[in-house]
Amino acid sequence: CRSTEQIAIILVLISCILVYLISRRLYNQRIALLTTIIYGTAPIIINLLYVKTQTFQLPLILYSVLLFDNYLNKKKTKYLIFFVLAILLAIFSRLSSLFFIPLFFILILSKKNKSKEEKTKELTKLFLLFIFMTIIFLIFCRFLFTFEDQDIIDQSLKLSPINEGSIQ
Image (cartoon, rainbow, N blue to C red):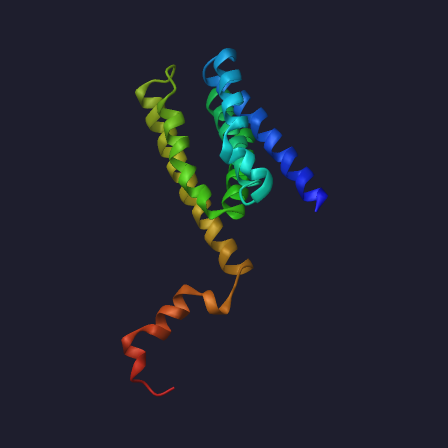
């Protein structure tokens, strides 16, 4: 379908722009250009144009990195709220987004202009925020995505040795 190809191209271009903005902020313009060229021509990124499995995940993760860095630099709550929304959408789009969570802790630790106390405070806030986000994610999964055959708790009760001998 032509429209899905156009959406995939737009999302890959958006992710390239986000890579440029993040790397320019963290390093400089020359490294940002080089990083964007390498990212945009990487076989796995070009493959996204055809496979379309992670097309939504990568721009959301990159956008959440940019928002979180904005929050660390400017301390405005709006960046934190949009960060939470972006990372939750990324997790809902693909569960493998959870593997990117350590990236945000590394981002805090890499800030050179922060004292040890500020970094500890930010790490604690981020940890509590991820606990809150996990609770939100589990609540949404429980109430919005209920699949009788895939309910882990019910399946474990059906398979337990205690229930094998009981009369049903």
